[in-house]
Length: 336
Ligand SMILES: NC(=O)c1ccc[n+]([C@@H]2O[C@H](COP(=O)([O-])OP(=O)(O)OC[C@H]3O[C@@H](n4cnc5c(N)ncnc54)[C@H](OP(=O)(O)O)[C@@H]3O)[C@@H](O)[C@H]2O)c1
Image 1 (cartoon, rainbow, N blue to C red):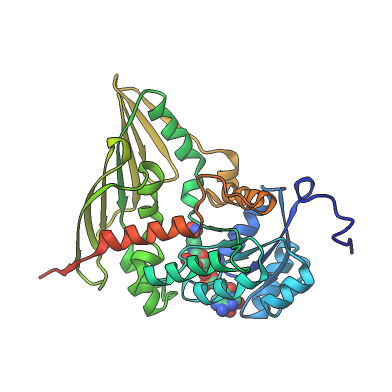
Image 2 (image 1 turned 30 degrees about the horizontal axis):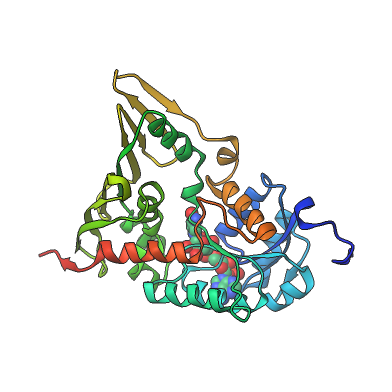
């Protein structure tokens, strides 16, 4: 085994990363790692060793550990990825801070604003106040097609409006039986933050918000309508109707151009003369779950430099998204 003294500098070789959690999303990250030579998976652990072993064997990860402490000691990672179930994210994330390694945390980091605040605070206080570099997996920010579509707006002038449709498929989600009651109850934080985060991604931090929410079945709301004003004057809207057919969409309005991501992984640009253009994502976004390669490259950059490049979000950015979710969903009125 090469000693750290004889290793080339971290900028000249793949960053050693270890994964915690061996579920669906760990598999997606391991697939995306094939597109990202800047990172190398060196170890894996999960709650159930057999699942960790099966996933490690499938992807050629050389080491399986029984605990995070053993993983860090034996695999000698330079970054950790926490890919556990939503209800386990906070305790596992907090337990990882003492290692001082750059952390990638899947969303959501907590099922409430209070939990997200606790983790963000703990990360900045960790290592005797030096803090632990971190990022949160809002992968939609890294869609190559978003960059291209926004570019079509900005090359013609100002971004005038950002409209986001965050229709969750709640009956289907409940029917899977995969999620605990506490995760389903907090779905606006657990999953709807993906689309709520896109308001901030495209528009910046909203300066004014007028929001309404009501509840057909979900206690924290399942019907949402909001109007927003962003820095620079762009206007925005957010709607979500979780018990009606429909999916996620974003529409950007520019000067003589409308860009529509519907579904989010596609892009249709309509120009003032009526012509229409379809944009295609980069090859990496077709080869793996969209946005995953981009955020893994950002993790490599974070491990190498200590700096997180946009459009990634760290815990403090993710906290702003959680607060926005709270703002869009409160107060909730029951539907008669
Ligand atoms: N960015 C996205 O688009 C996206 C999409 C889906 C999910 N996610 C997020 O990714 C995370 C994982 O979701 P998933 O779909 O992969 O769920 P999953 O298939 O249920 O897998 C979760 C994994 O976490 C492990 N785990 C649970 N508690 C643990 C603990 N205390 N310590 C160690 N391992 C633990 C489970 O253990 P065992 O199975 O080994 O017992 C399982 O392997 C969630 O936070 C979810 O919100 C993100």
